[in-house]
Image: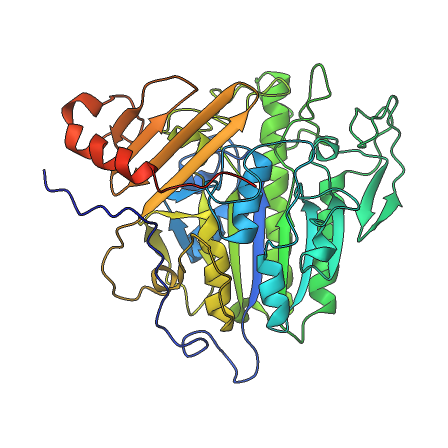
Length: 454
C-alpha cells in the first residue's frame, strides 16, 4: 500500500485566493457569517446523515442547498475544549482549554474569531452557551470580540434549560422560572418552567438579523440542544413538549430527545426564513455543526436512534463517534451543493473567516482555510495531521489522524490502536500489528504534536 509522506510539524496552508474576488456580491459589503452549533448532537442524528426516525427537514434542506462534510471533526469530545478550538483556531495540543474544568477560561492572549471579524468591521453577536470564561474572567464573550451576548457563561448553568437568569453582556438577566436548591452557578432543576432558554436564543437571533440587515455581521448561535440536564435524576432531557412524537411507542426519554432535535431544526428553519425575507440569503454563509458526539446522560440511550451512525463511540471518547460530527455550509451562488470528504476540523473555522474578510491570521494557529473546499477550487489533496488530547477525571486519551490512518490511545496506560478509516470507518479492527511502519511514523509525529498547557 502506498503511503504519502509524513512530516513532523503541523501543515498550515493558507489559500492564495484574493478575498472578495469570489465572495462579494457588491463592491462594498463582505458576506455575513452565521455559525449554528448544536450541543452533543451525533453524526447520525440528522436525516441528511442517515437518520430515519427523527425529523430534521430544515437542516436537511440546508444540506441539500449547501455542502455536506463527511469527515469534519470537533475540537474535542466534550464541550469547553471543543469550543475553545472553534474560537481560537488551535487544536487541543496547543489550546488554552483542554478539558471540562470549572475554572476554564480563555487567556488574555487568545485571539478569537469574533475579534478578527470585529477588526474587519463586523457587528458580532452570540446567543447561547459560552463555557469559555465565567463572570469577571478574561474569557467572557464581551472581552473576546462580541458586541452582543445573551446566554450562559458557565457550562453547568447551561445544563438547566429553565434557569432563573441568563447573562446579557456582563449583567444577570432575570427569568420567570423557579429553581429550588439552585447552585451558585445557576445549575439545578426548575419546578416552575415558563421560559425555555433556547427559545429565547432563537428570538434574540431573529431580532439581531432584523437590526443588522445593512452591514456585515457575525452571528454565533451555540444552542444547548440536545444536551441533558445532568442535575436531574431522571428525565434530564428537558423540552417544552414531545411534538411531533407524542403518539410514538418510544420510551419517554427517547421522545424527549427526538423532540429536542426537531425543535433545534425549527430554529434553523426560522433563521433561514428570516434571511430569505430580509433578502440576505445570497450574501450570508451559514454553517451548522455540533460540538462533539452524542451523549448517554439524563436517561438518553444513544443506541436507540443510532446517534453515532456508522461510527464507534460517543461523547468523551476519541473514537470517531466522539469527535466526527455533522457539518454543513450553505452560501447560494458560491458554495456548490454537494459532499466534501476531505478532513477538516473546528480549528479551521478561524482561518476561513479570516480569509473571507481579508484579515491577518494570529500567530501559532493550527487551522487552514476551508475556502478552496467550499468554493470547489481545484487543488491537490492536502496531507495534514489532525490531533486531539483529552483529560477529564481519570480519562487521559490522545488521537491523531493522518490521511486514512487514525491512531488512538483510548485511556491512560492503554495501548495505541491503529485504524484504516478508508476501509473501517467504524474502527472495528486494530491494524497496528500489520502496519508497524505507519505506527513508527505516527509515534514520531506525536512527539511534536503538542506543548504542555500553561
